[in-house]
Image 1 (cartoon, one colour):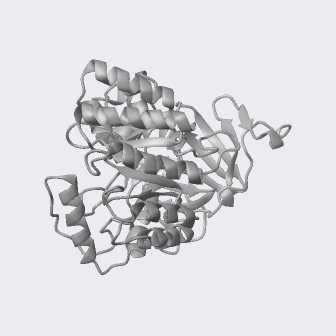
Image 2 (cartoon, helix red, strand yellow):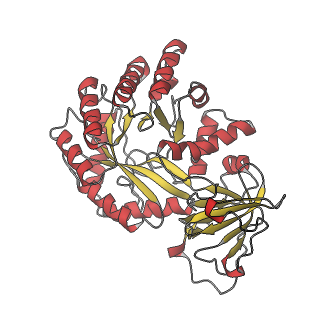
Image 3 (cartoon, one colour):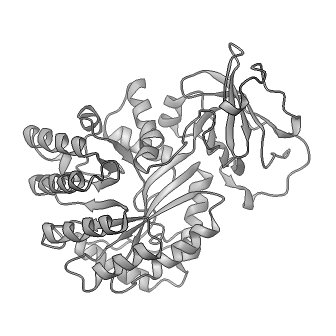
Length: 429
């Protein structure tokens, strides 16, 4: 195999999401210009205006030929649990539970038996994500009376180690409850002081038995620390919908629009038309986003929520851990799962499915300069597909993954795991 330049200057002959063929020039970790191969026109950063607009003339050693492969901005996993995964440890048999509380207890028991450290398991999952083209993830990290801040400190260490591969947001997640777990409000406060980026919550009514008390604490911490909120909500039916409206009310009151997410929100797939319409309208006005992983059973109706003006995006959730033995960390596969569950079949709907793991997820996470415009960060993935619809339908091989303009994976394999290549130039597809 010929070598891939570590910092390419041109990704030649790519297919853009809108179907155009182009050459993409890179400089200083960002997209410098996009040269349309059909017209010879290009868009460039303002600092480059006045330079030639024809095809780029980079040295061969910095040029990667992609022969029409689809180029996407790096995939975004909007909801993961890096501290929970069993990847990197021996296979763990699955043990279930009939309620969230029972499964929390089973998970705690399973994780106490593990001998592989959180840092090693989390890094194993990060490398898996990077190989699949994910450049950004938001990970919830358990904050509870047993582990206290240990998992957070482990993931803060991991974030330092993998910062050249992926960007990582951390949510202080009270897996064992807030009101019902002694000392957790103070632990969440400490977690935010120590470096957590957002504060989380869990089934304010169903788990804690006091929705107002939990939401008062969670939103109080968000206001005090100036952070966003990402809550798990599994509670069903109208009880769940009522909590969504309460979350929206607090979001609006604190001016947190665009910085609050409710993950799962199964209730939106269960309530009747009038309750759904009322709840969706309140969420849209407040700027509350909904995260789904396309689970079995009820799930938020993607198209209906979008039509109501609610941002919907996607995440993996659990990946091979005590909650379920499944999960690969492949966000195109996740888009496929959500598309199947939501009956997204037309080309337009497949583009929507792709947006859940790219642009919509990036917007929900507040990522800046994300995309394929000049000046955007060169966080990119080249996919062995002729277009977006094929990428979602088949989630094919990832040919090349870049983070801030540096190649971090080729052919699904992180560069650290690649054999030493032969000298020369690589044709990537």
